[in-house]
Length: 203
Image 1 (cartoon, one colour):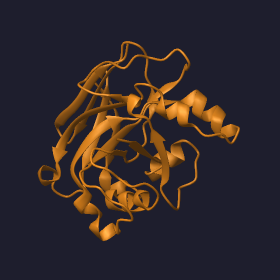
Image 2 (tube, rainbow, N blue to C red):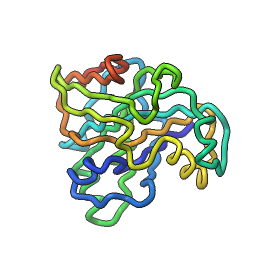
Image 3 (tube, rainbow, N blue to C red):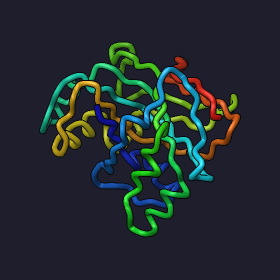
Image 4 (cartoon, rainbow, N blue to C red):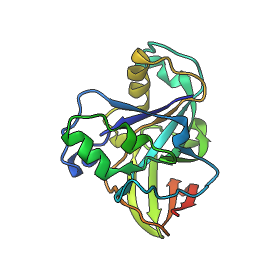
Protein backbone atom coordinates (compact mmCIF):
# COMPACT_ATOMS: atom_id res chain seq x y z
CA UNK A 1 0.00 0.00 0.00
CA UNK A 2 1.06 3.57 -0.43
CA UNK A 3 0.30 6.81 1.37
CA UNK A 4 -0.35 9.77 -0.89
CA UNK A 5 -0.29 13.29 0.50
CA UNK A 6 -1.76 16.48 -0.95
CA UNK A 7 -0.13 19.79 -0.11
CA UNK A 8 -1.73 23.25 0.05
CA UNK A 9 -5.27 22.04 -0.61
CA UNK A 10 -6.90 24.79 1.47
CA UNK A 11 -6.45 28.44 0.52
CA UNK A 12 -6.22 29.61 4.13
CA UNK A 13 -3.42 27.12 4.90
CA UNK A 14 -1.43 28.07 1.79
CA UNK A 15 -1.67 31.71 2.84
CA UNK A 16 -0.69 31.09 6.47
CA UNK A 17 2.59 29.57 5.25
CA UNK A 18 3.14 32.29 2.64
CA UNK A 19 2.70 29.92 -0.31
CA UNK A 20 0.95 30.40 -3.63
CA UNK A 21 -2.39 28.69 -4.20
CA UNK A 22 -1.69 25.73 -6.53
CA UNK A 23 -3.29 25.30 -9.95
CA UNK A 24 -2.90 21.50 -9.76
CA UNK A 25 -2.72 19.19 -6.73
CA UNK A 26 0.69 19.10 -5.06
CA UNK A 27 1.41 15.42 -4.50
CA UNK A 28 3.96 13.70 -2.27
CA UNK A 29 4.38 10.14 -1.00
CA UNK A 30 5.00 8.72 2.46
CA UNK A 31 6.24 5.22 3.28
CA UNK A 32 4.06 2.74 5.12
CA UNK A 33 6.32 3.10 8.17
CA UNK A 34 4.92 6.61 8.64
CA UNK A 35 1.62 5.15 9.82
CA UNK A 36 0.57 5.00 13.46
CA UNK A 37 -2.68 3.15 14.18
CA UNK A 38 -4.78 2.09 17.20
CA UNK A 39 -4.21 5.41 19.02
CA UNK A 40 -0.63 4.47 19.79
CA UNK A 41 1.59 7.38 20.88
CA UNK A 42 3.68 9.55 18.61
CA UNK A 43 7.31 9.68 19.74
CA UNK A 44 8.93 13.06 19.14
CA UNK A 45 11.95 12.50 16.88
CA UNK A 46 15.45 13.62 17.81
CA UNK A 47 16.21 15.18 14.40
CA UNK A 48 13.72 18.07 14.58
CA UNK A 49 12.90 20.84 17.00
CA UNK A 50 9.72 21.96 15.24
CA UNK A 51 7.15 19.23 14.63
CA UNK A 52 3.79 20.66 13.51
CA UNK A 53 0.39 18.99 13.48
CA UNK A 54 -1.59 19.07 10.24
CA UNK A 55 -5.14 17.69 10.53
CA UNK A 56 -6.44 15.97 7.38
CA UNK A 57 -9.34 13.95 6.04
CA UNK A 58 -8.09 10.61 4.73
CA UNK A 59 -9.61 8.64 1.85
CA UNK A 60 -9.18 4.84 1.79
CA UNK A 61 -9.07 3.41 -1.73
CA UNK A 62 -11.31 0.37 -2.28
CA UNK A 63 -10.71 -0.51 -5.95
CA UNK A 64 -7.79 -0.89 -8.32
CA UNK A 65 -7.69 1.95 -10.83
CA UNK A 66 -5.67 3.88 -13.38
CA UNK A 67 -6.52 7.01 -15.40
CA UNK A 68 -9.83 7.38 -13.61
CA UNK A 69 -12.19 10.07 -14.96
CA UNK A 70 -13.26 12.45 -12.20
CA UNK A 71 -16.94 11.63 -12.78
CA UNK A 72 -16.24 7.98 -11.85
CA UNK A 73 -13.77 8.61 -9.01
CA UNK A 74 -16.47 8.25 -6.34
CA UNK A 75 -16.59 4.53 -7.12
CA UNK A 76 -13.04 4.01 -5.86
CA UNK A 77 -13.55 4.76 -2.16
CA UNK A 78 -16.17 3.77 0.39
CA UNK A 79 -14.75 5.24 3.61
CA UNK A 80 -13.27 8.48 4.87
CA UNK A 81 -11.26 8.85 8.06
CA UNK A 82 -9.03 11.35 9.75
CA UNK A 83 -5.32 11.61 10.37
CA UNK A 84 -2.45 13.86 11.31
CA UNK A 85 0.28 14.69 8.82
CA UNK A 86 3.10 15.53 11.20
CA UNK A 87 5.66 17.78 9.54
CA UNK A 88 9.20 18.54 10.62
CA UNK A 89 8.75 22.19 9.72
CA UNK A 90 12.36 23.17 10.30
CA UNK A 91 13.57 20.46 7.92
CA UNK A 92 10.87 21.25 5.36
CA UNK A 93 11.74 24.94 5.46
CA UNK A 94 15.42 24.22 4.87
CA UNK A 95 14.70 21.79 2.02
CA UNK A 96 12.36 24.25 0.34
CA UNK A 97 14.90 27.06 0.61
CA UNK A 98 17.48 24.86 -1.11
CA UNK A 99 15.07 23.63 -3.76
CA UNK A 100 15.29 20.06 -2.46
CA UNK A 101 12.55 17.45 -1.90
CA UNK A 102 10.95 17.49 1.54
CA UNK A 103 10.30 13.73 1.75
CA UNK A 104 12.07 13.28 5.08
CA UNK A 105 10.17 16.15 6.72
CA UNK A 106 6.84 14.52 5.83
CA UNK A 107 7.53 10.80 5.68
CA UNK A 108 9.61 9.96 8.72
CA UNK A 109 8.58 7.02 10.92
CA UNK A 110 5.36 7.80 12.78
CA UNK A 111 4.57 10.96 10.81
CA UNK A 112 1.07 9.81 9.87
CA UNK A 113 -1.22 8.75 12.72
CA UNK A 114 -4.64 7.68 11.45
CA UNK A 115 -7.89 7.05 13.25
CA UNK A 116 -10.98 5.03 12.46
CA UNK A 117 -12.81 5.28 9.15
CA UNK A 118 -16.48 6.09 8.51
CA UNK A 119 -18.64 4.87 5.66
CA UNK A 120 -19.49 7.53 3.07
CA UNK A 121 -23.15 6.69 3.57
CA UNK A 122 -22.91 7.88 7.19
CA UNK A 123 -21.28 11.17 6.25
CA UNK A 124 -23.96 12.51 3.91
CA UNK A 125 -22.76 15.37 1.72
CA UNK A 126 -19.06 14.74 1.09
CA UNK A 127 -18.62 18.41 0.24
CA UNK A 128 -19.73 19.40 3.73
CA UNK A 129 -17.70 17.28 6.15
CA UNK A 130 -16.72 19.23 9.27
CA UNK A 131 -13.62 18.04 11.11
CA UNK A 132 -11.53 19.33 13.99
CA UNK A 133 -8.46 18.85 16.15
CA UNK A 134 -8.10 19.54 19.86
CA UNK A 135 -4.73 19.82 21.58
CA UNK A 136 -4.89 19.37 25.33
CA UNK A 137 -8.62 20.07 25.22
CA UNK A 138 -8.30 23.29 23.20
CA UNK A 139 -9.57 23.58 19.62
CA UNK A 140 -6.58 24.27 17.35
CA UNK A 141 -7.78 23.30 13.87
CA UNK A 142 -11.14 23.01 12.18
CA UNK A 143 -12.06 22.60 8.57
CA UNK A 144 -14.74 21.65 6.10
CA UNK A 145 -14.26 19.50 3.01
CA UNK A 146 -16.21 22.07 1.01
CA UNK A 147 -13.24 24.41 1.34
CA UNK A 148 -10.80 22.06 -0.35
CA UNK A 149 -9.32 23.49 -3.55
CA UNK A 150 -9.37 20.01 -5.09
CA UNK A 151 -12.19 17.63 -4.10
CA UNK A 152 -11.76 13.97 -3.19
CA UNK A 153 -12.78 12.96 -6.71
CA UNK A 154 -10.52 15.52 -8.39
CA UNK A 155 -7.55 14.29 -6.34
CA UNK A 156 -8.19 10.65 -7.22
CA UNK A 157 -8.54 11.45 -10.91
CA UNK A 158 -5.32 13.47 -10.89
CA UNK A 159 -3.26 10.98 -8.88
CA UNK A 160 -4.40 8.02 -11.00
CA UNK A 161 -2.87 9.62 -14.08
CA UNK A 162 0.56 8.98 -12.59
CA UNK A 163 0.12 6.14 -10.09
CA UNK A 164 -2.09 3.07 -10.26
CA UNK A 165 -4.17 3.24 -7.10
CA UNK A 166 -4.67 -0.02 -5.25
CA UNK A 167 -7.00 -1.35 -2.57
CA UNK A 168 -5.89 -0.05 0.83
CA UNK A 169 -4.00 2.99 -0.45
CA UNK A 170 -4.53 6.08 1.70
CA UNK A 171 -4.83 9.66 0.48
CA UNK A 172 -4.26 12.49 2.97
CA UNK A 173 -6.27 15.29 1.38
CA UNK A 174 -4.67 18.42 2.85
CA UNK A 175 -4.93 20.51 5.98
CA UNK A 176 -6.87 23.67 6.82
CA UNK A 177 -5.28 26.60 8.63
CA UNK A 178 -4.24 26.44 12.26
CA UNK A 179 -1.22 24.16 11.97
CA UNK A 180 1.15 24.49 14.87
CA UNK A 181 3.78 22.86 17.06
CA UNK A 182 3.40 19.90 19.36
CA UNK A 183 5.54 18.98 22.34
CA UNK A 184 6.12 15.97 24.53
CA UNK A 185 3.14 15.52 26.85
CA UNK A 186 0.52 16.86 24.43
CA UNK A 187 -2.75 14.99 23.83
CA UNK A 188 -4.36 15.23 20.39
CA UNK A 189 -8.00 14.39 19.64
CA UNK A 190 -9.35 14.46 16.07
CA UNK A 191 -13.03 14.35 15.15
CA UNK A 192 -15.34 14.28 12.16
CA UNK A 193 -18.36 16.21 13.33
CA UNK A 194 -18.88 15.16 16.95
CA UNK A 195 -17.41 11.69 16.34
CA UNK A 196 -14.03 11.13 17.97
CA UNK A 197 -11.91 9.01 15.64
CA UNK A 198 -8.36 9.59 16.88
CA UNK A 199 -6.97 10.20 20.37
CA UNK A 200 -3.28 9.83 21.18
CA UNK A 201 -0.38 11.32 23.13
CA UNK A 202 2.98 12.79 22.17
CA UNK A 203 5.86 11.16 24.04
